[in-house]
Image 1 (cartoon, rainbow, N blue to C red):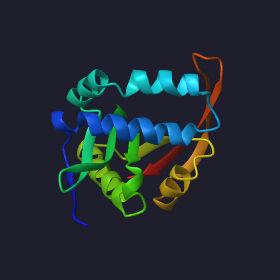
Image 2: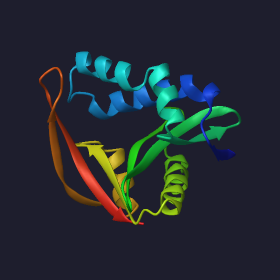
Image 3: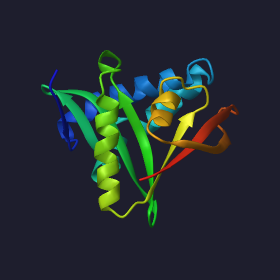
Image 4: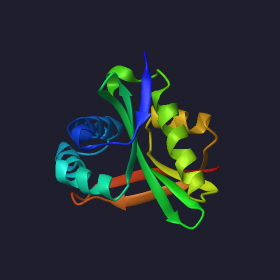
Length: 164
């Protein structure tokens, strides 16, 4: 399997939308209502939003196998020296093959070039795909962030940090 990491482009938008929507829904399955899941994915992962976020530089890399998008990552600086992983999703068919690691390495390299010395990420509480992945890469739990959704549900994110 030959994986290449590239900058996302217009022809990747549909696949990014599908991978992010499906990946995010899996992380909140059984925790947040179907109604909220539909609202949230319609807001964040519609094609126009992805296009504008891509132009703003929030989607930084895609993993390609042949010309198929296998995964996507995005992030940015949130203040001088401080970076954030905004999203990292790998298509279910390609998980556990090192693609997430390659994407995180690409984003981390970019963020270091931009002057970041620390990197943050939020992981849904109970996400047994994300939590072990980030902890294995040196992220340390810093605390919990609780938010109310538009549907009145409580969403709990775990905030992780690592020095880069």
